[in-house]
Length: 382
Image 1 (cartoon, rainbow, N blue to C red):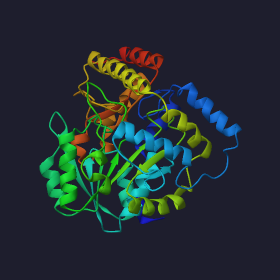
Image 2 (image 1 turned 45 degrees about the vertical axis):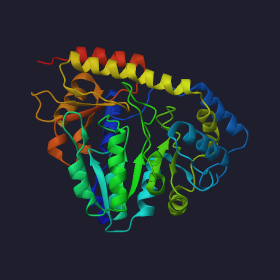
Image 3 (image 1 turned 60 degrees about the horizontal axis):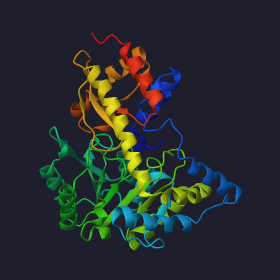
Image 4 (image 1 turned 120 degrees about the vertical axis):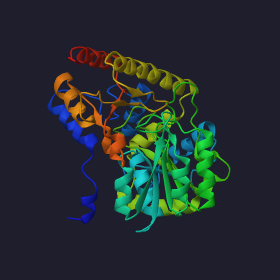
């Protein structure tokens, strides 16, 4: 077996999902909606299948989807991307990040990543043979530690990897933070991979800003997003990466040999989603804001401390004092309440910072949220 496997474990998210199924628990450990996507998308997928879109796609993405993405990027992200030169469609945002890391680094290169992080980033770096430097979110407001970031950048890493809106913290990096990252990447000649998969899910008037829209950052940014979260189709596995022509060409070589291409009929169907009016995105954020409030009210009722999320659809919460750590608390919730959550230490390099934390996903239908509340109320918290 490859020695690389010694440096990371099986996904804790997938492990908790498996345990959830074994115990018939409500699964809040994985960011997977339990409700259907818009009917228009499902109908478009059926039509694409019936219309014969069932063979290999163009490796870097169906022309119809790339054209729709170019229009969407200009309207929503202030990014002017050429659909033929700058846009690559992938098997989900996860593959986009993996392909970008493999295409843009050599063994021994440095990568800077935030702490905590989305769990796939670390294995990506290990598979590429790169070494990692972690930059923490700091204080109650969980802002990036700018001194730590500057110190990390002085080592001239090849890449910085950021995720905004952030999983698991719920932070939405503001323009000043992004401008600081932009200045450092230019000063130390680094490329930024920015994972924006939750771009349309923000709260409390927070605005998502794409790093590639700031100054000349399009030339040194790989912007990653996808359909999973915006259209509630996590199983469709269609994502995309936006980059300048040189990086896109490198990226496409890796992508071709990783997966050949994303599912052809689902690419065709997503053109329908990308043409939804602005009202759709407003209502998406409003729907998740209601679910956020429902979840945080449950936590307050149980006297569980939490971090108020500004975006995405997760809450980071702290284990009550009676539990030794987040893992013990997660086991308690699984066994006593039939609710599966993620022990968040798996997403921290600094295990002390993440030791007492759990992550709960609230991308669930109202009936599921009511069932969670019922189960939590039956627990003896004393």
